[in-house]
Length: 115
Picture 1 (tube, rainbow, N blue to C red):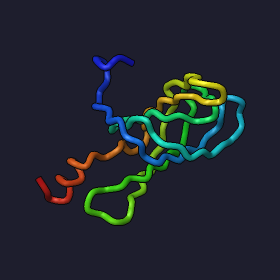
Picture 2: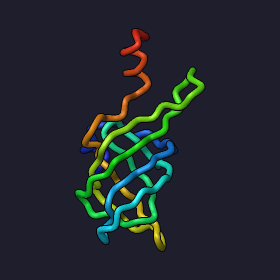
Picture 3: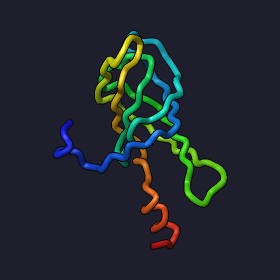
Picture 4: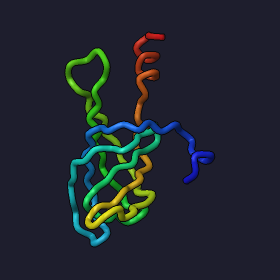
């Protein structure tokens, strides 16, 4: 998808992500990796399995929030947009969030009564 058609701004950020689902061969899996970029509506990451476009995933993202000691866990669901090989046994996977969308720090400040 080109930058001109994106709905949300992407941030190049490495966040710890755990995904669960079924790989292209139909085997259930769970894998922990890091995101390469994140937006309110999805993320991109590299994993060791090829996933079928449209496959449904459970997603956990560990977020470190400024001013808080303990990290926050963001839970959602997602669908695979594409899974592209980037080396032997590695795939860049684009995911669209179908559950709650990723909050931004600005929206958290506003919700908490901040600026």
